[in-house]
Length: 409
Image (cartoon, rainbow, N blue to C red; front, top):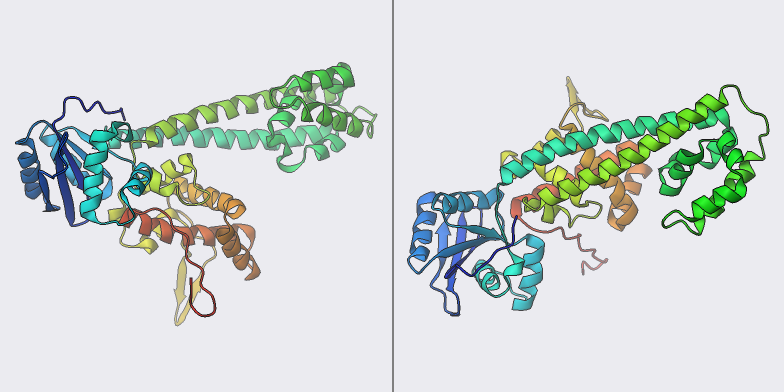
């Protein structure tokens, strides 16, 4: 989306869109009294008549609070009439609305959209082609999936090769430690015991100290490397060839990380075209990339009957099996939208680390006997209910209010 130059416009039509009713408030450039202030049914003819009336007062700009879901009809009608449409993101609208007082109702929201657009146009952006952005994000996310899968294979092979030349060194870089920038760069540079010993402790420490952000921990890590290398003096068969492969694989991982970062940035740029992303980012653990992937894979929330339908589509709902009078829930449902399921699972895992409520839910499921992935899947299913309600109502995430024994919040 592009920033809006309001100079040509004489009328600012703020439209608070709703499921069955919209509220339109039209203001001229300087007056406080609305030129139009009324509810408009969610019907093409009614919307077209209201916009034609606004156009009678001068060149109009339509500003909406959401152009996906309920706002699609308003945007479509306005564009068919060659009326420019701008958008104020939900996050930005919430910030702007705080300056107008605490009360919230449709008429006031429509007035804020119109008034803020003419006084602080930096808060709005033109609405572009949402469908094209969603299609582009799907292409980018598909390529991102390929990169993540290749990177995972590289990490697994890297651990195997390091263990073949030096089990103590692999122990130092065990589990996810190779995912750190410093560790992977050290391995890409020196490979293994032969490479480190040829460079020497002093030279390797100097090189590590010159790495960006690692001037302190770099030399410390090199000291740890040489300490563990002292535990194994024998050179294992094929070590020279294996270390060459280690350096090659580690360098490839660094390339893949850079490529993933570039794709993430491209996804975030296109996500600005999708208003649901702002809403989803308010959920703990959901960053801009996962928010974009979730929004794109869900598409129009109106195509799902309820949260159960959405959970089944995402592949996080338990599957029921009936036999006679018995009903069993399978632990895992096969199928579903793989990209949506992955985004929900990954963001749920992050929420366990940063959100006390998510952590408590996860721990409760573990206490019930569920394994790690089963507990995460249950958490993801729980969050689908929240996501469905948020997208259906166009609201931000609000954590549930805890109540005491007397029922007070």
